Length: 83
Figure 1 (cartoon, rainbow, N blue to C red):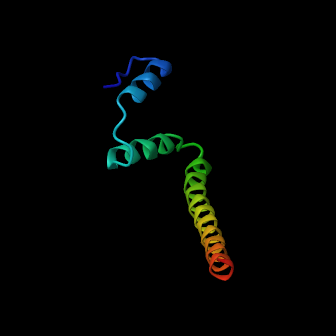
Figure 2: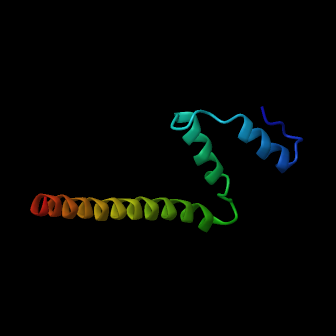
């Protein structure tokens, strides 16, 4: 467990050692906790930007996959037409 009296380098090393399995709830909890730690009571814009950044990332990944699906459809049609 990470102790309160450890410096940030020690905490970072311990966090890498104590990682949870990729894809587990605990893994994502820790990732979100790291982001949420940036929220500051005196800087409301930080928290707002965390939410806005999450929404932007969702949209960008959705757009990327939609474009990829269109390309797969084009390739499939080309294969049907030419093979």
